[in-house]
Length: 303
Image 1 (cartoon, rainbow, N blue to C red):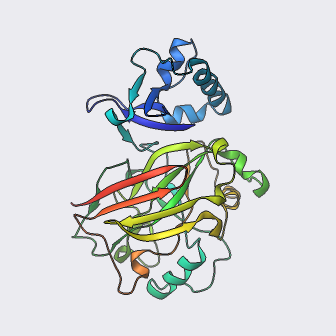
Image 2: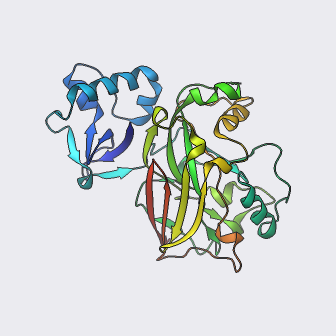
């Protein structure tokens, strides 16, 4: 299933929906018609675990296109938000997780030329998250080197503490698309959080595809364009540390909780690695996609 957070109008509250063709079906309203209490927020739904997913699947099959009154709206008439508009805690970012990106970073960002022996982990605060179509803010007073990174996001579905790699994918709720925006000139003494953690620096969406529809997350194409020009294209098979290993590694010392998000790293093609280097500026448009999940399109604006 493809789950979204949406608003039916500017004034309306954010609600949880499931995509059914070109419609957004309101999950709480679908449940209410059948006497099955289902929440209207993504994090509350994830908290319920596999039982809620099973109930939703059954209700969708039973409805078979006969939706509750006011419970299904055309996708073109709603505004999609980030699937998790406000994560409970920082997003776990993974740096240097594709071989060619390690090489380009060593050339341009003074990182080691050697492949990491363990995942390189940083974080992005909840305030970085924006939804589909929202503007990425370019603050010229802070940065002249705003860069792009397309990534697969893995959303945790149940508490993971010291899990084994072979079991780790069982803890995934689903997958989404992320853009890890980075102010390259804002790194401080080797620390990345200010560079990557500024407001609007984590576009997310357009949906979460549940894990049952992506049994192997290491088979997905991902790419990014700036103003229609392709900058990145690769496949998640080229990750140094696969999704299952990342979950296991992080969980050895940090408990992963339902709704936590791991941004699994970006392939080569970032602006800092180009010759000459390239950056995005107000007026530019960034488009990123992960096959089978969806597309993000974001304008860059001055702010």
